[in-house]
Length: 156
Length: 104
Image: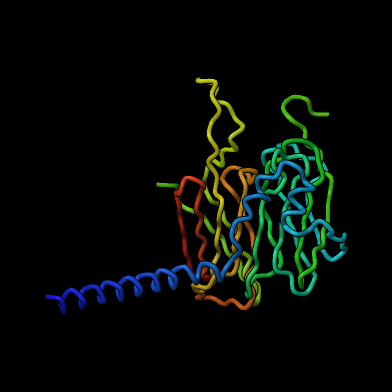
């Protein structure tokens, strides 16, 4: 009796440890690709805060970061933008719309096999600078472009 | 069940240009329902992952400011006909969808 109790206790302990171990293993691959969501940066209401929270407060303007965005967007809900980085070691691309209620629009973590290029369509709350921030070899760079939006019937 | 993801791939040498359309309302949480005058809750894709032959190549976090029915284009290097390209998304309500196709 005592023996079987001991056995079962040990077995449970072992299974418990095994379960915990397998759980850790299951989670491990998720950490390998992509950073955890930077909730604070996404919730930030000011562009300066969002930039600081991704670590890009001191980002430098770079000619090697290309941002293609329209001069005038007729539909502020569909603004087509393209970002390309010629910087070696580009690992992450962020997109910001400076005057959006929450300026951080998207973060793209690039892994080996994909070019440092993305195209995406975004919503803009107002005419504003669109900003592309790139992390390459641990440093932060950016490009920006002003896009005017014509909202509703107030096209000007 | 969300509407199917659509994908178009053009292969130029070993570079595959992948264009993806993901049908989704992408509600910003700022719109009011004209009937009830109440705010429509946020409902948006917050995580997108693209893969090449099963290996993750692009891992994206999005906000509600990505346009409705999101469009995404990316380029894969070192690809050839027969390779598999996949895209999967998950939204803030826990709904998810995925699609995989073979480069022709």
